[in-house]
Length: 154
Image 1 (cartoon, rainbow, N blue to C red):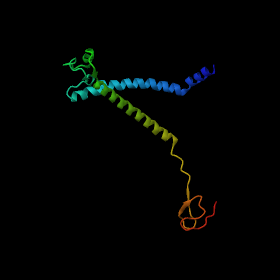
Image 2: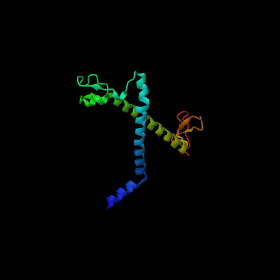
Image 3: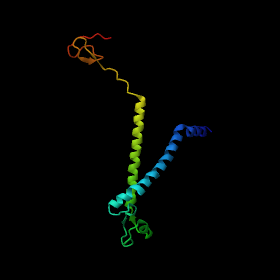
């Protein structure tokens, strides 16, 4: 019974709920980015590169089965072994967009956190000035390394 109670306490904690919300929003964001990549970014790029449809870019490992086939779907229907590098390009661009977006989000959150925390406290001094020659010396020194005067410890 103790393990069940412990699990319930873990599951109800705010961090688990926050993480679940983050995963759900992240999945939705991933779908939006995939749509932006495949439906908005890649068509104009394909047009600039001579009417290339990135979804249909593939390399056939069975060229006799896919002779004169330009569509990835039709190439798959033949049962030929193919490398669909066009879809890989779309997914790679999706990844770059998502990772850059996450980077910007984390950077913004870190900036806000730093502003809320304020400036760091000043570091404790590690040196003092010699009362005789005014040169900096370590706090624990008993003699000045510059003028060799004996120092009074305070």
